[in-house]
Image 1 (cartoon, rainbow, N blue to C red):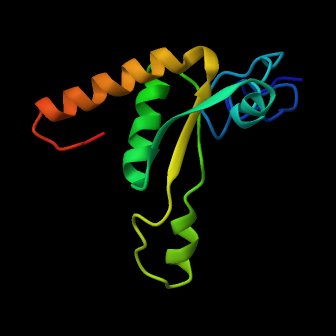
Image 2: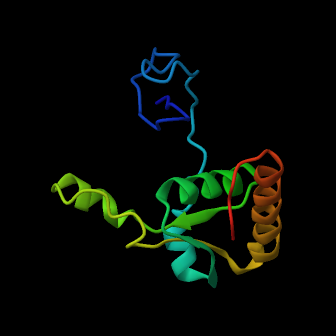
Length: 127
């Protein structure tokens, strides 16, 4: 049976392209990467970045991802608060990014370069 390598849906014989992803189907799926949260539970992990600004946390996680550094960002507790009508609570909850112990130095370097770059562009980001 053919499979889509992106969404991993199995198709009947005779199909060549995934109708959702528009990707060519393959005869065998590549192995799935383990969920980073499970990996971080099994191996030593280190908090690398802490902020109360959810947007900043997601940007930093994106920069780490672009550098090939897998990370885990704690959930946004304020999202639930806004949903039930409690308004903005920025600054009350911290978001933490964790990386594997083996990636700590490289992650720090990437984050420092990002902060320096944004400072040179005129945007303000203090650490």
